[in-house]
Every structure is written in structure tokens, then in C-alpha cells.
Image 1 (cartoon, rainbow, N blue to C red):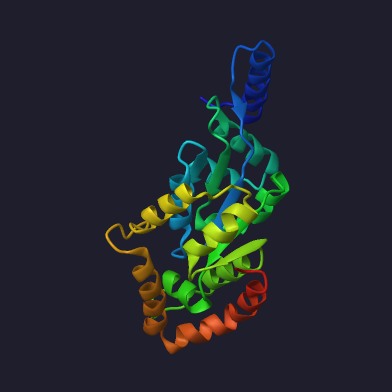
Image 2 (spheres, rainbow, N blue to C red):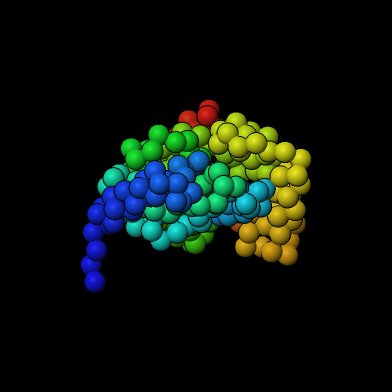
Length: 244
């Protein structure tokens, strides 16, 4: 069966509005609080986990969801708005914030999100060598992947450096950029979840964070360092002017 999502969304909006006018429902659609765009292995899962952990009742976090990924691929801002509306419906009073962590490939479609919503977004980005090492076999450099990384670098409104990510999230990005209050309880919950960071569930995030970055640098080949300098250094230098 094939359905028209635009018609479904319009009917859903009309239904929600009619019930609200009759005081028969508390259903509403949350606006997106923020989007997290990223390259792979630069802390995006930790960001999503932190946003969830700090207040699970208030924060709804979608992590690399297929509807969002597919809507971005369409290059259709209206379709993207419709998908976000449907995913943002809630009747829970305590739910106040909605975040989307987009798949790394979706970083090429930042312009679609930006046209659909004038909301803030962040890219968690490591140094050029570390980013290249996350993508490439040290024995082979793929120019197409390099180009995608460079494209992501140049489209960020706000960027977050790989090192010291937790402190930057708690002290700046979440309260100042996303506009979400971080109290002592939320801070403690984020620190707790960071101890079992993302895909490395048994390792301390602080130890893993430093060792991972240094390991990538140490294991990089002269060819990868050269490719990083050639393809990424100019964009990365410009990007750092706006990063935290």
C-alpha cells in the first residue's frame, strides 16, 4: 500500500487541532531543539547518550533514525518538516525537548535541515588525521570519502572539538547553544553515562577519549597525514575559528 505522507501529515495536524479546540486531547508536536551532525567516531553517540541521560522524561532523542535519514535524502524541506512533525507528537507534559542525531552520511544534507528549520546544529569533529583514520584503511586513501569529510567541515554553524567533549557539552553547548538548563543532577547523570561511553561500554570515557585520539595519530601513515593536510587542513583551520 502506498500512502501520501503530505496528506497524512495535514490530516494529523487537523485532527490534533480539532481535539485541542475541544479540550479532548493534550497532544502537541514538539519543535526540534537541535540536530547533531557528525563524522564517524567523533563522539556523536556520547552526545546522544548525554542528552538522553540528563533528563529522560524531558528529552526525546532520536539517534540515526531511518525516517530522518530518508527524509534528508529526498532533498525536500517540506517532507523533512512533515517527518519531524510526526516524530515530535506527544501528550506528555514533561516532554519539552527533541533532538536528532543524524547519521554521518546525512551531514551532506545539512542545507535541507537548515531550510526546513532555522534551528541550531552542531558537528562533533576530531582533528583531520583522526577523522581520516576513522574512515580509511591506512594502506588506502579514498578521495571520495575525503571530499565528504571536507564538505561536512565547511557546513557547520557550530562545531565541537573532539577533545574534552563532556565538559564542552555541559558548560556551553547544551545550556548556551541548545538553550536547555543543566542542573547539578543532570550534570551528574551525564558524567555517569560517560563512564560507559557509547560503543566501548566497559571503558572509562576519559581514558578512552585520549587514548583513541592519540592512537589514531600514532597509527596514521605519512600518506594519510599528507592526505589530511591536502584535503582537510584548510577547512579544519577555518572551522576551528568557530569551534569550542
